[in-house]
Amino acid sequence: MQQSQRKTRSAFTLIELLVVIAIIAILVALLLPAVQQAREAARRAQCKNQLKQLTLALHNYESTHNCFPMSRITITNPPSVNSWSAMILPFIEQAPLYDAWDFSKSWNHEPNLTLATNDIPVWLCPSAPTSSAPPADWRHDTARDPSGSKYLFWPAIPNGGLGGSDYGTTNEVRRSFYEGNGLALPSGILRGMPGAMARDSITRIRDITDGLSNTMMVSETSGRPARIIGNKQQHPTEPYVKDGWGWADIDSVSRSINGSSPDGVNTNSTSSSSPYATTVHGGCGVNCTNNSELFSWHAGGVQSSMADGSVRFISENISAAILAGLVTRAGGEVVGDF
Image (cartoon, rainbow, N blue to C red; front, side, top):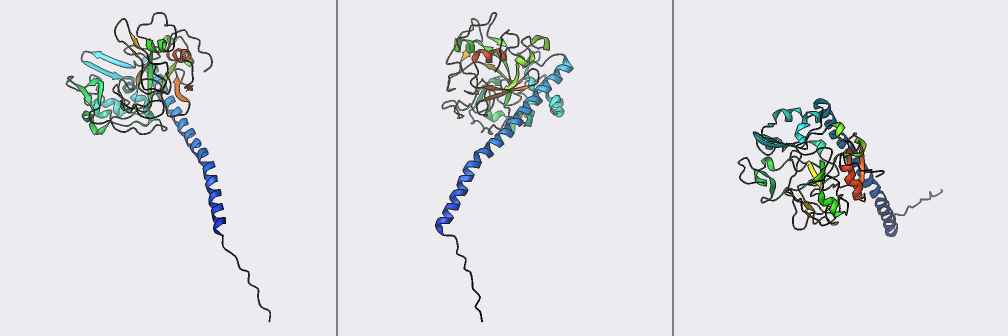
């Protein structure tokens, strides 16, 4: 009688297991950056689409009213101040918010302040982290409470915070940006050169003489209320901005290019009264700080819509002269390729 032969199968040795684990780890390490890049590409595409939506809303407003909205609307009787973001609510599918808004009151007075706590997805870049709430002693330097007697402090904001915003218009290029970059001051400049949408002044399409495709409309100004500097960290001594955040805030969605030091710690300023004295720390205008300048969480630059509705990527290495030319609506600059 023949005996059947049995084949014995040996298990993996410890060394073989370690080799397999090492190979898997290497594959994961190789694939992870590709996965992260794919996710960021999707987020960047969504961000681009949202900028297009906001710019389309501005053009729909222009078609209805024969002008673009003012970046900031100040009314003296009764006194109130609101932003363009509230004016375009019907054109971004937020008609109920618009109908409830009281334009005879400022954005930070009721009922508007409570309405301003609503998050509107089109205002939020998916690449931007969710900002933490400021501490109780945070204050808004340019917004007073309904009594008008003191600054608006964080505890006064209903529901714990304002609806966020990662986008805004750049309403002018300040003198300090020109001086910080050694650029000649444009003829006729006072405090700054106006952009596509200026404060308390309407803009018609015919006013954008630099060309719609050469003039920035809505760009990324991300990360508020945290004050972020060039290394994508909060400012070491002033971790929160004091001049605006949120989609309804007049100072958050309407910014000026001032310039800053390369590390973003110190920002330039231009006096609001004649003779418009300047304080200059540097000439950076992109991705050094979100205090007033263009800022995003995308690598290498920011996205901005142009007045013709297209969206362009603005490199953080763009020349100061070209950046200033892209912001102004009637500066007569030749911007060329960027």
